[in-house]
Image (cartoon, rainbow, N blue to C red):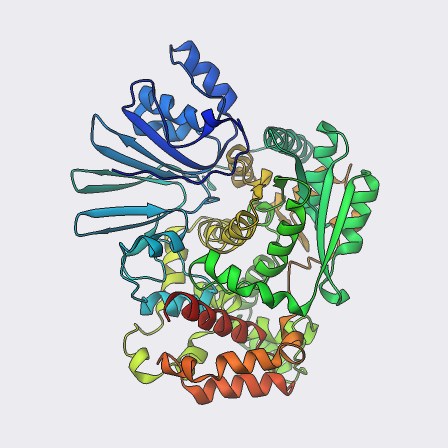
Length: 583
């Protein structure tokens, strides 16, 4: 058995904190990626039970906690983590991942060899895996923009699911789910009391994430979640260091909203503007993400992480608020579509006819385009409707794109079926709770958390997310759906709770997100790069796609006849990944 670790020192900077760490007798060894936020409390408890600590690091807590409780020790850990523990006396490997998947963990089992790593690139470097692209994973990637867990882009390489642990002993592998949210066990609570409890939980969550032996700050977008985190940090610290990212295109920049919070709390504020030459860092991103990844907001995330690292080593952020408190427009859209589906057929037909004459646009933010996109899917079954709204390539586009020999390797409608399976598995009495649970088990860990973890760790920066605290998420899940989405107001209870310290202009504006103007870049500065990559002979030789279809996508977008920015970005990142990992 071999354990290896490369450390970004955050707590206990001395050599005593180096990993792997063991118990006193050297029979239990552990490596940890992440932070255990309640380690002080657990350490006091373990010392009272007779355990001796050789370091001041949070990692050592896992060793002694395992000695007391075995694999059930994972239930007491509060934090973000992926760890591997070797029990020499039992000859057993125990690996675990935090409840929402903040930290990644890949593994592979073949020919009596079990290997694992925090990054797919590390498994590739080990020489222990076969780099065979999974056709099904590639198909899912083009739908979602990422490869959904537990699969990876390589056949035979898996991701440990969030909230799961796995044991390997005498060749037997046991995968156990140890945590899930309980949406149907609703609490009866007055609105004012819910707001106070929410603030109490968020305050505690922020406070425990501010413990660090290195400098600490916060990402600040000026949205609801990051603004609330910075406001609470200002209660517990001196002058908070804040960091924001923006674009020259005002349609994509939130800097003015971030400045309003920075000024209100007199933070030490820093801003950075992302320009089209940002693609210069694509080789770094492709290597670090390890598998195809099509969320273009990884670019500003990388840059804000790089700039933040110049001043601090730990940064708090607002990730997770949208998935717990219903912050996305698609949640509203699903409920509206359900109501439309119950209308008389003649009314539905009239609405479809009206939609068909609305002008289309190549501007992704155009309101008529958004209405057309809504009605394109509004009459589909729930899971297919949601799939169409969140997908990059829908099933029709993929079938037109694929070479016949590649298409023959796939099951028809496999991504739509995967979404249907999610709707069945996470179905609750409320459609909104179903959507929240699905996103917490897919979009959040497989896209958003991957984006931030890789971009930040590539810059040796640790990001902490107070809204992903277990106690806060469990409270949010049990709140009635009307506390989350009330009329046109998303994240209702959260906004009401933080009104006292976040300006209303930050709370009640339309959500902008972390979009990147790649569509405009592809028509200007990056057009040559796009053509050289996607129309190259190397890309054609992959055998996945019809060259004429890709050329038509490039030409239509370049000429401004259509907006294929998401599709072209996904194809671009896929080809860049092949160049790095397969050529």
